[in-house]
Image 1 (cartoon, rainbow over the protein chains, first blue to last red):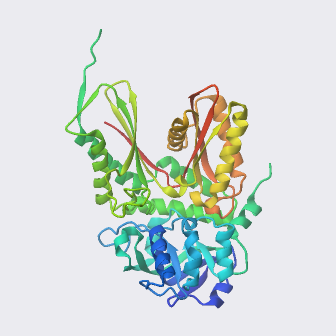
Image 2 (spheres, rainbow over the protein chains, first blue to last red):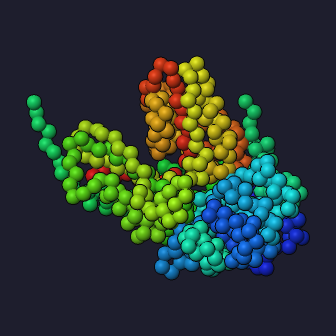
Amino acid sequence: MPPTPTHINCNNGVTDADLDSLHAGDAVELTGRVFSFRDATALRLTRALEAGAPIPVSLDRQILYAVGPSPPKPGQIIGSAGPTTTARMARFLPTLFAAGVRAVIGKGELRGDEMTAFTTHGAVYLAAIGGLGALLAKQIASAEVAGYGDLGPEALYSLEIHAFPAVVIIDTHGSNFHEQARVDWRRAR
Amino acid sequence: MEVQPIREIDVSVLRDAVARLIVEANYNIPDDVLQALRDAAVREESPLGRQTLEQLVRNYEIAAAERLPVCQDSGVAVVMLEMGQDVHWTGGSVQEAVFEGVREGTRSGYLRWSVTGDPTRMLRTAGTEAPAVIHIDLVTGDAVRLTLASKGFGAENMSALRMFVPADGVAGISDFVVETVDRAGANACPPIIVGVGVGGTFETAALLAKKAVLRPLNVRHPRADLCRLEGDLLERVNDLGIGPQGFGGRVTALAVNVEVYPTHIAGLPVAVNLGCHSTRRMSATI
């Protein structure tokens, strides 16, 4: 049987206790608020933070979701909204963690230094299923541009999510589920 | 000498076909891919992998029923034209007709605009003059076969090309395919489709690999030895254990498709183009 999901509330960010309770391979369902980011968003946030300039939202204890949604059809809250590859933004994560980010939702693998950035900050990496855009959009109850609106699909969105499914990849105890899964399932030749 | 009649086609016919195909391709995953995912969901041994595959099938069913883009990354439109040499286009530019079709379909289908005008990002306000990549093959006859693929970049980014030498042979090709899939891991959105292009020159190999990734999954290579190679490579790739979304399991790839072309006696170009489980393609004949 697949694992039963742990429910995490992130209405006002996440607590360390909640993060520490998670282990690589756990299924989670998140309810609350997350902020979207992508290549251009991460670059702009990082430049502002490094320059000591203001950013549109407080990242204190927040979760970032790597997503660039498609435009909503009339009557839709948001268009398709599945995760994008986290590794493309990995170089910006140490700065974003220092600004308060506690967890990242994305897809794909993080290795070596990319993973170390998480473990040194006690942050958690969660993977949503890539290519599940139509279904995941149904777990988003509201979407508002919170900043950088000129970036279009790469704008910083404030997203209210409900029972949003993900799998814990990097936990605060130093485990990496992607690495473990390969060890468990690889067939030697 | 027999004179071939020339068939005149107005470019607006091409524009409208592209606009229709890009929307339909983004709402409807090809039948062969959906069937392969359904089969994989039965075959997968890892519980989390199986659940992931079931979710993907549900996503595709809902996208088709509610007419939504299957994925927010509607990709770069790759338009392949097998153009009959007896066709004469009227009414404007063929290239502009394709671009206009892509713009129109992207707008009307509520697809994400995923192309930047300047890959260097040095131009801050780059326009979007060229929203598609176009490949043209001239063929005999007076028909135009049009294939449109919306190529997502999660998998595209993990593709690779290497110039081998003849002595590297099939062993070299095979190791490179497995190494590329291993390095791509979860980033390419497995279960993936692996397109392998072998031969020609540097750019031929890449284009062959693209054509290979767009070949229907239920079509094997007609050459018996290459058909066997496709099967062997699929087994090796699936033995990596990456599984659906890198969560571990038996199904890392749905197919390995190989295409070949003659090459120089000194060379062995090999390209590996990866397609995510959401490899969107649709064809029409004008």
